[in-house]
Length: 256
Ligand code: PGA
Image 1 (cartoon, rainbow, N blue to C red):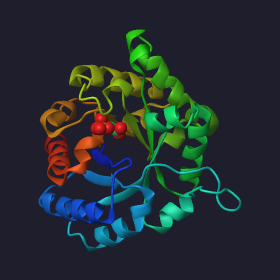
Image 2 (image 1 turned 45 degrees about the vertical axis):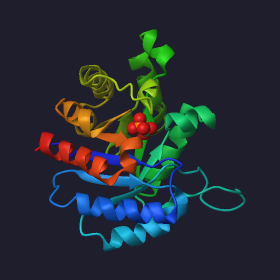
Image 3 (image 1 turned 135 degrees about the vertical axis):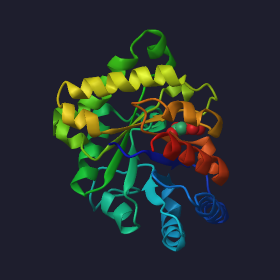
Image 4 (image 1 turned 90 degrees about the vertical axis):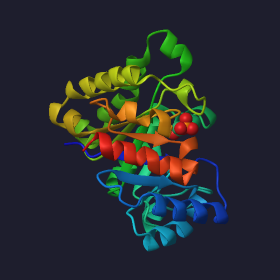
């Protein structure tokens, strides 16, 4: 049985005060919510503070990050290594988010390199994949997702997906309020799983595939009712403790 994972991607939002309020609020709102892994990815500046607050929380909150670079140490100005993330207790690391692919020209191959680097360090990659609106309209969604996953499979083998998380995020649904319907998302999730199953049925069966893109408390339950949607990667709604906890709760309920 796949265990649901709901992760908050805080993106470029935060201050010491906001991180503190949000994590304290989330801890309170998660009371009694069981059967779902809840993770947050604050901006890297706030990992230290988040680690301390999570350490004091009564409910389990997994710490994550929004990115990692591809070097371990040395003359790489501005880079952050997996060891550094680990040092602050971050385990679930988002890579290949469309905002990084778009604004920082990150290629499938570069993202695959990050994936390998995280695995080497025993961290959990949260591999974001997804198509643009034009690709969607051209009927290329599954091919795009397959290509993005294949960059990992080709370099590291399908087994590398064991223990990793895939986040299917149609780019046109991110931050737009224009979420994919639960049925459409399910269709793509099933196709992604079938694509992985061509290499290994076992890996396909066990890999967690989250949906992301305008997930809100109002639409969350419909996604989690789908058999191949194992959780969510949440942006905007993760900045509100009550909303984010409601989404986590919906996942726990649906996947009981
Ligand atoms: P959104 O963002 O929930 O605000 O659409 C999702 C994401 O980019 O991970």
